[in-house]
Length: 113
Image 1: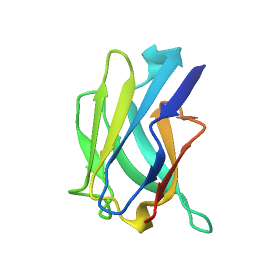
Image 2: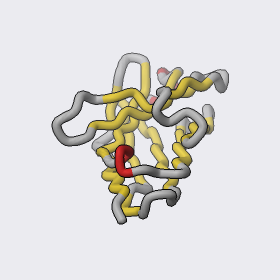
Image 3: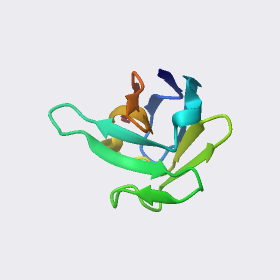
Image 4: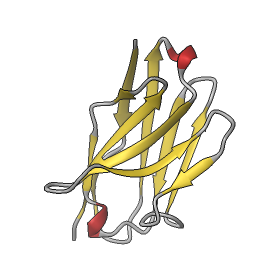
């Protein structure tokens, strides 16, 4: 089993920045890829960004150029640097790891003036 613990969410004004962290523990040797999804009230869960074990990254079009994902493949930790935040980024951000598929409990990000 793998446990994922996120941190770093909070309330920020439009244009501000936040950095999310996600640390894996347990049977982490099985993990290859890690990333982030988000879910806003009344909306479907949306992929935000993910990173492979060899460092390749993928971003949703809505965050490309504003968010940066990085990670430590040995420690199985992943980070999401979020800049130029807008109200539409408000959501619960969930860390995930594969294979097979594990989810964190989520951290709230609220962008509001």
